[in-house]
Length: 286
Ligand code: UDH
Ligand code: NGS
Image (cartoon, rainbow, N blue to C red):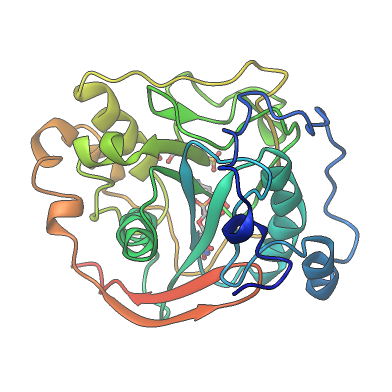
């Protein structure tokens, strides 16, 4: 298009690189989950977010293209808060990003790892993303200096979570919000596809990172603070009794269980103004 809004195509000079420290950041933010969210309003407040929840800074060229992958089922209420808070944060960070909500179809046992792997592959079918951020839908950063981009080591964006008294449950915790470059994710063969139900897939993911010689890094504790939306336990995501055995065997299983063994079917893909929904059939636990 050649309208006045497509300033990138008609500008004469190439855009300068986006600054390492985005100047528009505000630092600590007030995050609460009481006010009602109206998505029409979120859309109006983020007019430069394009269909499918994609954003490209217009005043600079971002170094990385970031895909944000969110595993999902029956959490519409949380999605509204997440979009309300994250779009403005990501825009201030001058990120070039796309939001992918990966929905497990049906009522069989939830499989978060599979949804993450699917998100990685499906996002890459759309754009040549460099960086993948895997986020729970109910986690919102409390400081926008917590940059949603990839680093030279896999990143855990959470250093302090409200529900753990602004600490981590254990040092090697690697759940909630994590980010890996494409190369880092390929190196570990993605997530395991074999964690059905709650727990352990994030511990297995951590072992994959360390077993391949990488090391997780986190932001400073003041910057890595998160709020979690309180909620009732999900249906069809019971504690997985096999998780303790499985996380002891990552070294043996990771080479053959992951991206290279992933099987799924896309049921549909819908681009909404603020995000892309991809509904998938992940099969059933054996
Ligand atoms: N998710 C859904 N729908 C579900 C289940 C999970 O969308 O039905 C997604 C969602 O993005 C969520 C993420 O998966 O934020 C993680 O879900 P989780 O069940 O692993 O974690 P959460 O902290 O709930 O939200 C923890 C339940 C308490 C477990 C107690 C174990 N003994
Ligand atoms: C560990 C789980 C992780 C989980 C973490 C925090 O025990 O998957 O607790 O859970 N590992 C196993 O079960 C092996 S939380 O308190 O957020 O519900 O992420």
